[in-house]
Length: 315
Image 1 (cartoon, rainbow, N blue to C red):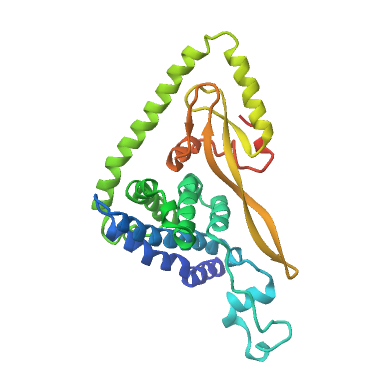
Image 2 (cartoon, one colour; image 1 turned 45 degrees about the vertical axis):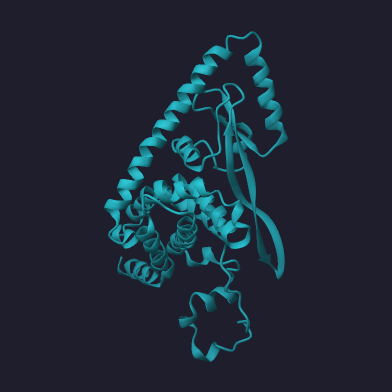
């Protein structure tokens, strides 16, 4: 028991990713106000994306530090993660390359891996994917491509409850992330959360009512069954129960591809799937809003994402 405790204690001490995430998330907590300019949104979003990427890597680091490395084999990882363990006589051994790969995995790969070991990541994965996309736009693209309305919603509405969940799961005092801004952040978020829940409820009622009328049309249900199967057969979709009419809807996804180094060669592999939107051909329910998708999927963990075969059969 003492050895296990010692290993956990060392790992905790070495994990700078979670510690560094607090720097960026404190900035976000300090800067969120009820009224945010476009410039405020951009600056806060930059820090939010950097903080969340480090937090995801920190979660993986807690499980196994090698899980964050692009090239986790011994020759590279021993120098990058455990360099203090190498005895001085072996610093120049031929077993250790002079130039070792220190690169770590991307935001998206960190998310796809962390959702396997973290309920909080899983329950917020669509919001986290949205933050990852925001980061990519801010870093590489024309800022005109940034959806400032969605970005502001994530900052003002979703940031507080999401980080509160992370703090609880990781057993970290939430003040370490919020920098004593909890009252302000909860006030701003709670007002918008009420609107969100009402919006989702109204959406479901609207399309449930439409379905009650549409299903009375002769041949309508049969035609939509055929239409759904035709779209499904095209690929990049899996079947899902519509939250409004409870018929078979389709969840559209995009494969996430990452480059890996294997035997000195760069290979592109599919590492996961990014949910893009949910659409029901029967009642017309459709959404691509990340937080709504998380609400829809929150109670379906055992039915989806348990392997690629799930996209073929489950409803």
